[in-house]
Length: 310
Image (tube, one colour):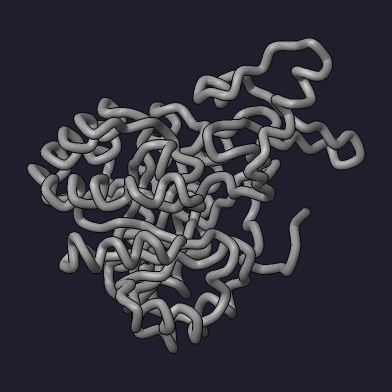
């Protein structure tokens, strides 16, 4: 049997922090759009401080996303933000840009770092390279299969995080492509956070697939048409000792996330403590999760068991 993986979720607001921790989350990932990519919600500095108080009172961890690609004009801001996170006692910073790592070395050398570049964390050698630079965790790419995940864990010198549920990003451009097009058409599409609630979709009639799309300060984001769900395939990763399972809450309601978190909490604990009962129940878990899905968002296993899904 493996060790108990951390169950990491992405709440959309302070109310969700309370509810998802009560539902069984071990850790939360939050942040603000200026520094983090594709966040479930916007957390100001005061929100982050309150979230840390709430989570730490329950013995849970808070990680803050600094995964944006930083141009010169933002580099000078990083030290102040990281110093604030350090004073607030967050449990780690998730980064992709080496500018974050270098700044942490200067202003918060004891801060834990999780390396996450979304698509390029595809082998154990590179994970260990960033581990030797100071990262304590690698967030694996969503585009690799189960065999590769297990091989990375077997050879990694750092902790390993895997997304087990939710949507993934297919495409990002720093340009606000849709906004520019809509403006050209004389239509209104302001580039601000509420665009996530406008339910913009790219529709592929051949596959009957709908790709959510939104724009923010970091550009244009096109998301997967289906949600990953690996609730019935946890055994190998748990036995391999994968350190963290992530449930992605982007474009999801707190009601949805609360139910999904509770189901994964039960499934993970059963898989570790009562394997036979997990085997008996896992199809039921999958049925319940399918029943929670919106009409046009199916569940699938992403790239876990095949090379491509798009």
